[in-house]
Image 1 (cartoon, rainbow, N blue to C red):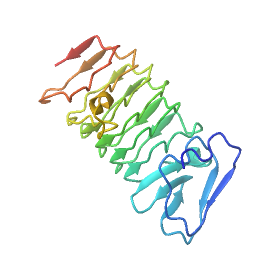
Image 2: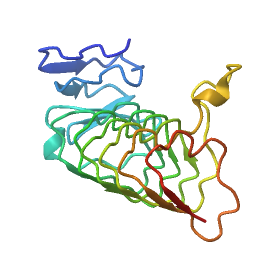
Image 3: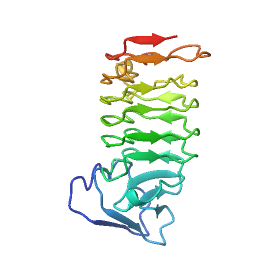
Length: 219
């Protein structure tokens, strides 16, 4: 289920050896410590972070996570880093290829260092990160989901990644799918200027829709 332990007083979650599936986002807005039975072949804990070993996906940041480095994984799962006790300055390790939807949703991060291996950020990836003033996106980022920076009211500086070609829809099967595409910088009132680097052939459809703060786009 979704948000199983949200705002609860649970202090410890113990995963049995038989558990084989955890839905992404099911543990968000919790800060309990989490342990995995040593005979469980599917999940492990490292530095307080829960990881699906089959996909290399980080699923949850537990109570002890603020004291440890984010481990080497391939994906950051949906709402995996919303533990409000995490450090305000985060470094994601090389090897991370994808930030899933709402990975940093409503966190108080002030700075995030993204790895050069990153290629995709999902829908609402940094939504309502209201303390984030700037961000460098690696040039290998090809895909930015719907409203990635929605509500990042202090975001004043962000670069245009050289490889950016895709704005996937949040609801691709809907007849109104294009209504849920792009709008990357909606609510970013401090972001007034964006420079498109030389070599970019086209800007993805709907990418800059609803960018009310932008006053200048340099091509």
